[in-house]
Amino acid sequence: MAGNTQPAEQLDERYRVAGATAEQQQAVDVLTRQFLLTDERLGAIIKEFRRRMEVGLAADSTMLKMVLSHVVWRPTGQETGSYFAIDLGGTNLRVLRVTLDGKGGATSVHQKFVLPEEAKKRTLFDFIAQCVETFLDDHNMRPAASEPPLSIGFTFSYPIDQKSINSGTLIHWTKGLSVPGCIGRDVVRLLEDALLRLGLRVKVAAVVSDTVSTLLAAAYSDPAAQMGVIFGTGTNAAYYEDVASIAKWKGADPASGEMVVSIEWGAFDSEEFAILPFTPHDIKLDRKSLNPRGQAYEKMISGMYLGEIARNIMLWLADQRLLLDGRSSAILNAMWSLDTSYLSSAAVDNTPDLAEIRQIIEKTLDVPGSTLVDRRIFKTIAILVGERAARLSAVGLVATLTKRPDLLSKPITVAIDGSMYEHYPGFACIMAETASHFIPEGQFKNIRFSPTKDGSGVGAAVIAMLATQQQQQ
Ligand code: ADP
Ligand code: MG
Image (cartoon, rainbow, N blue to C red; front, side):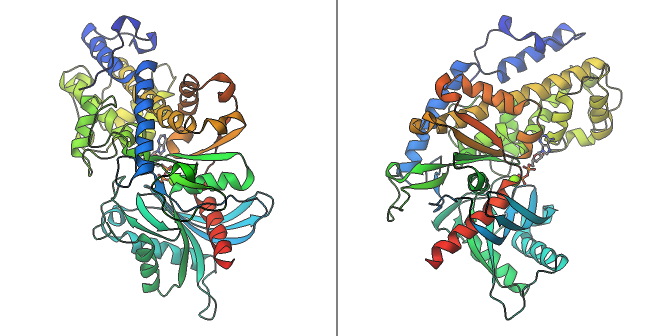
């Protein structure tokens, strides 16, 4: 297994656990060596990531799918009108009606639904259709039979093979979904059919990934927007690519000369496990996941997985009687019982007796009687797992940004969304700081990282509008 090479004596003082026994500290040092990544190591991963991007632009069915979104336009910010949108992430579903004000601004009416397990396993499209119906009825927006069908932008954040802007066949599920009968089928048809079963006539004008819609939401107000990135349940990014660089594009060249490409970067190093810094805790998670050996990069970075990595580490320590005196609980023993949001809370618990962490261990995980050292170790785990995620996230970012150095000679905006980015303490800073080690200073200062909260809803509406405009020409 690929290990990290940082010698023990150089380990950061932050990972010394006050009051720990020699055995406990030794175990924490093992973790520290596994989870801290040197710049040298990251540099090698960036190089491989870039190579994989090139392979994905040349041919179909590669590790990085480089999905061609068919989005070949940029909004001017002057577009107006109201459009509906559906934003399906991995945890939440939002239905919106977005009104574009023609000055780069947008207002929306929206409703948020949490995806139930039943929908993730079986009833997804019917569940989405019911949510759309609820939204339309609650807001008195259901169109009359005499009216034309509603036009809607659909943010669908799973890898699809797109032959047009409003169709896409599902390649495989990610992020814990496993709805049968969908792989190889057009997700737009599946959605339209489910809506029709409820008597709702809806025309999906565009289907896009959340990265593409986040990018377009930013582009509506900012002509410098070049890249959209998600760190939510999963992780992925999209960027404007020069069509001349997309060897696998066989269609007519668009007038703009560019197309948004969704990298599907969560799959980096999948199947091969050749270069990412796998630890036994990652491997354990992977084996028990719904998609073993898939989404390798995503499993080290995104919200769905980090809590589970931390839980595996806790059990590894407890089994050696180095944590919680060897005790566990039914909750701590159960997969996925530690939500990543608890790592965020733990990483910033600065109370003298780590009261927040006590709450997590003793109440949420139901293991009473934690010592202060147990809680300090828990905090160290949260920091190690979160910081590795932030540093690894810089890999994809740097590989993509340096792919088009022409863009870095002037101001460029990277639109970013997702709960992990928004809430994990220091994630944004560590990611940017790490990226700055790999991009020349003169270019790095041109990059603006722009939090684009809920951009994937607004962006879907912007794209629905651009696609409709295109069809009308
Ligand atoms: P979606 O992926 O559906 O668009 P989000 O961007 O909100 O949704 O991401 C949800 C993921 O983020 C879940 O996996 C959840 O565990 C994680 N998450 C939620 N709150 C936090 C937090 N405070 N810190 C870190 N991760 C979080
Ligand atoms: Mg989202």
